[in-house]
Image (cartoon, rainbow, N blue to C red; front, side, top):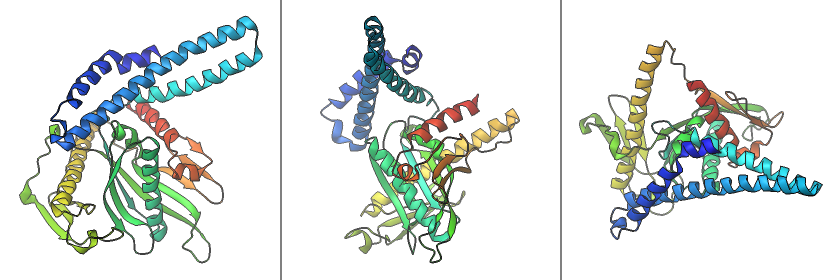
Length: 352
């Protein structure tokens, strides 16, 4: 526990909380709603993390007392209670240790998640929608707000692609291990002969761009198209040409946003996504140069990274970490913390 507390630097955390509390108390806080949201979100996150760390320290001290009492009274029930609490404390320590492994340049950022259907036709589109629901349900379990920027619906079922943001500190560092190709094996509900189908969906995770990132975009290198939003959207959204698609001509990157009624708001959101993609492209180019210097082939650990098997047996398995569970429905309902923790630990090992 001492090493975890040292890495988290509780004194520094308390000082940062004090600064954020002063900022949050300022009368002019909500003059800039976006900045206010960042301040209050970070303050809430740090306060919760400090409380959790202090509570865990207290539980560790209490466990020692429980064992001492059980031994002094030779009480089997008390010993069993102490062992149960010890197991629970160890689990909590493991979870907290994972947080200390998030030390990358952008790890503390919010996460921009893009999911796209790949090979597998309508099953792949349905799978992409299931993955979107999985991540949104995971965020809900942790009380992290999400905002969908754009969803392109498939004709028969599911989605072609979607882009959404998870608005929580360290969301990028946590979810970045999800990047790669996800594979689903099941009896297709769309096949009238009831045959087994394998389908694929790709997940891309980017750090949300901040003002300090200096991603220069030349407006003359952009093509901006406006169009009418498609798919479920409620009244108003589908009746005006408010959706925006931006093409960055030099790289061929295309982004779009249709969640707002205002064309101006959609363009601003689409520009944020484009900046995030260009920032990630720059990061990858820099990483490729480093890999070349190290003699590393630059092999990505992304690609196919997890299998969800619903037939002929039930299992979800991470192909990098070997972590697996036998409850696919629970995973698709957002129970992915075990995979995230295993992925973060695995990534840290690869960096050594």
